[in-house]
Length: 109
Image (cartoon, rainbow, N blue to C red; front, side, top):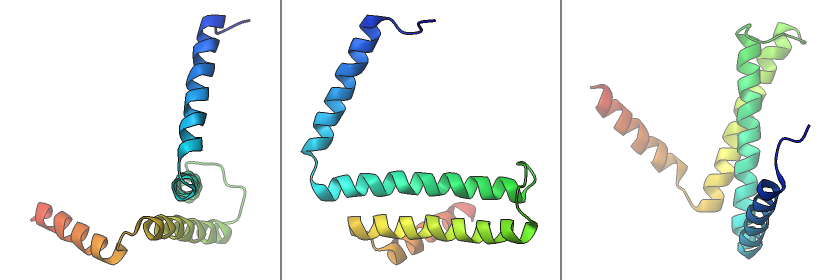
C-alpha cells in the first residue's frame, strides 16, 4: 500500500535538502548547541520514563531501589545537559534561576 504520492515525496526531498543546506552553513558551535538540545530532549524522555515507572503508570522491569536510582540519575542527566547548554550560550544559570524564582514568587503573591 502506497501512502504518499510521488509529488509529495519530491517536495519532502526538497525540504530535506533545504534543511541539510541550512545546517551545513551553521558554525560548529551552533551545530554542537543543536546536538546538545537533542541530547537534552533524550534525557527529558528518559526522566519521563523514570517518573512513569515510579508512579506505576508504566510496567516495571526493575526493583523499586533501581527505579529510585534511575530517577535520581535521570534528573542529574537533565541538569547536566541543561548546564552544558547554558555554558555554551553564556547564560549565568545562578542569575537566571534567582530571577525566575523571583518572578514566580511575585505571581503567587
